[in-house]
Structures are given as structure tokens and as C-alpha cells.
Length: 342
Image (cartoon, rainbow, N blue to C red; front, side, top):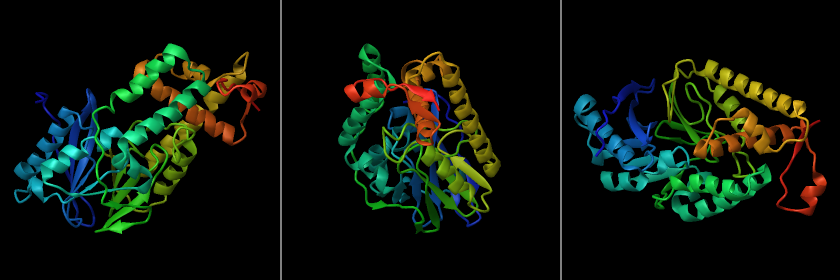
């Protein structure tokens, strides 16, 4: 059992009368995620389930017990009849099987583009690892460095078991007053959930960091282009008083936060163009990453390489970059892609 004191469960109420309980869980050591219990949106509903690591699941169960002890004496764990997964990343769905057992069974919903992550998990990992391997080689990673990065990618995924999915949620769906908005970019099937004037923004909009975005060449419906389109989509929603993500603090100035994220993206795109333009030779994604994120190691370096690729891909797709070594790429599938500024 974890001995660390957990942050308190927080209680919010939407303009539509839904009681929202924000439940903290230490998804990985020192890395916090949030699940949400919804009371008043049809049957009691849990949104996200943490990582499945013992401290994470214990934290969610303790938080649910706190709802009964501190807020709603009528609530019981077994009242949860529906679980919605906002997106197919392990820190949000990894605890699903254990929590299904704890509540005595519930209907599970997710967007169709992430459904396979739950129902065919081993297949998803194998396919994703293959795509990631191809991407890293193209980015300039080879040999022992490639092996180490792939090991870091697979480490947090070894404990996951496949699960059932009972229903899917798509863009524009409404279920018991929950309005679903498909927001791909960070993850293919990510959804935000609107409850009146409250938006559960998953990992799409966070309070002080922007989520990691990988190149779409690794996974369809990710990438910076989709992410920016999804930011514009949720910014067009009227009347959001409060947004709460899968990490970090609640967001009271939602629309201004999106403006800041977009401005930061523009700054980083400009910096990448400057880095390549000032280079004495064409640059690979790894070369660019080494300038942008010189101190990153291990799994953080993998995330940095994916993020650099997403930005480079975005610039290339929009005609700002050209491939400098076409002949080498034509002759070998193993060739590292090098870029120049047009």
C-alpha cells in the first residue's frame, strides 16, 4: 500500500447540476493524473482509470471512498455503472480492468479510434512499436540508442490487459447530458466531455504545459495539424467557465489558455526553422531535437524525438521544408531523412 498522503478530492458542480469529483492518482512515481466521478449525468460514471500501477489504483479507490465519507454518504463504489476512457494512453486506461473488478462491473465506452487499444492491446503495442521503429530510424536513431529508446517505450505497458468495450462515443454524441467532442492530436481517439459550463478536457488542454504530440507518421490522427485543429474546435465552444484536464490544475481562463498554447506552438515552429536555416548542413529530426532538447534522457528523450518529429512534419507538410537527400532515400529504406528550409 502507498504511504504517501494523497491530495484531496475536489468537488465541482456544472451549470446543468452534475456533481463532479476530481480524484487524484499517482499514475507513475511523481506524475499525477486525475479521474472524475460524475453524479447526476445518468448513472454514476467514472471518467478515466489511472495507469493501473498499484499506487494509482489505490489512489482512485481511496478517492472514491472519500466521496462517500466527505461529500455524498449515499454514494457507494458499486453504484458506478459506466466508465468512459477519454483516450488510449496508459495513464488514463491502465487501471480499467482492476476498477471494473472493484465496482462489480460497468459498461465501458471510448472513441472508435482508440477502441482497439482496449480490446486488442497486445496487437496495438506490436503495431505501434513497429511504426515507432521505422520513425526513429528515419529520424536518425540507430543501433544501441534505438534499442534503448524502444525499451523505454515498452516499459510502462507490460502490465496492461485487454478489456471489453460496450459502447463508443463519437464527435457530437450526447449521452445523459454529456456532450462529446473528438479532439485528436495528442491521441487519435481523444474526447473532451462537456457538462454545461464545465469541460473535461482530458490531455487536450492542460493548465501550464502543452501535451506531447507525436508525428502522424507513427499513429494516424495524431500530429500537430490535428492538435491545432482540435484546439480551434474547443475554443469555438461557447460558455466554458471551467476546464479540467487529465493532469495539472483546473483552468478558469480556458479561452486565453488556448491562445497561449497556440502562440507557444508558433514560437517553437519559428525556432525550428531558425535552427535548420542556421545549420551548416541539412538536419535530421534527431539533429533538431538535440538542439531543442539537449538535456533530455531516457523516456523523456523519446517524447522529445516524437514531438520534434510532429513539428518537423507539420512544417514539411505545409511547404516550409524540403528533403535534402532524396537520392539516399530512394536507394535505401534505412536512410535518415535530412531537411533544408525552402
